[in-house]
Image 1 (spheres, helix red, strand yellow):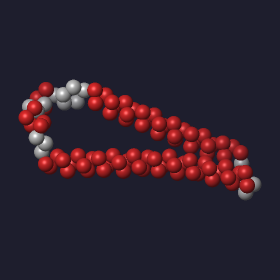
Image 2: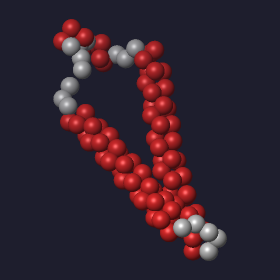
Image 3: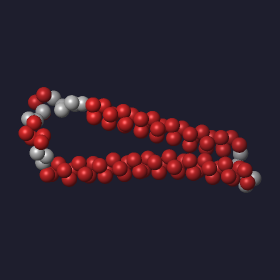
Image 4: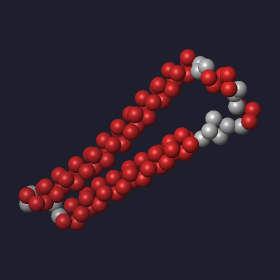
Length: 100
């Protein structure tokens, strides 16, 4: 949270510092990579659950409780990802509602 002394006059806000533009682009890339890794992790857990189901249905071993745990793990990972996404969208909407 910014303090009153840290606020800049409107003239400085209108003219961005070129060094800050590169930093913002880097932050965007970092956020994108973070999001891609999160989606990949959820997708990997879902894939593991799908593989467990396939092995169980094919009769290649595995027990029903292991399959149920894998499916529940995938469902929880997806629900957690959705909740985090909802919080990010909510924060973005709150920022967009702020008046400058």
